Each structure stands twice: as structure tokens, then as C-alpha cells.
Image (cartoon, rainbow, N blue to C red; front, top):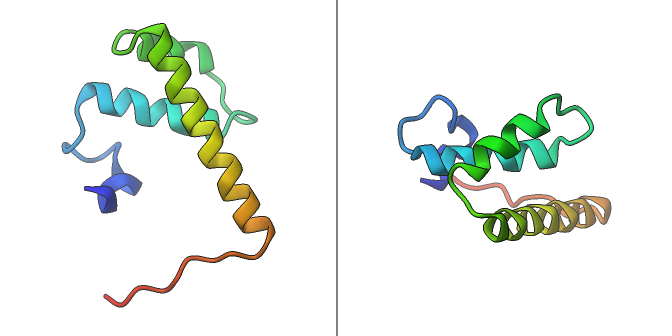
Length: 82
């Protein structure tokens, strides 16, 4: 299912709760261009309690930070064989 993440919006594989979490992850990741962060947060809170939202946001932020560090030091994904 991880290989379907790039098309999560078009896929029927993810529940409404999972889709809310993925939308939140995109919003936090692209915070500088996000235009509806409050709306996404309201939607997220329909499916998660405040503690879960904080935990999810910390995990998203940590992964973004780790990715930025890796990219900064030239780490690139290994090419996979199809």
C-alpha cells in the first residue's frame, strides 16, 4: 500500500481517517504554500483527538526534518529494479 501513497487522493485504498491524516501531512509539509490549514485541522479533529493530532504533527515534522538533513548532505534514494 505504500507504493500507492503518491496517488492517495485518487485511490480508494485509504479510509476517510487515513485520508485526513495524509492531507494533514501534505499541509504541514507544504506549510509555506498551504492556504487552508485551519480547515484541514478541523477535518483532522473529526477523526483524531487533540493529543493524536499533536503526535501526528510531531511525527510529520520530524520526518520532514530528517528528509531535509539527508537531502542537504547529498543522500539520494537507491535506484530500485522493477
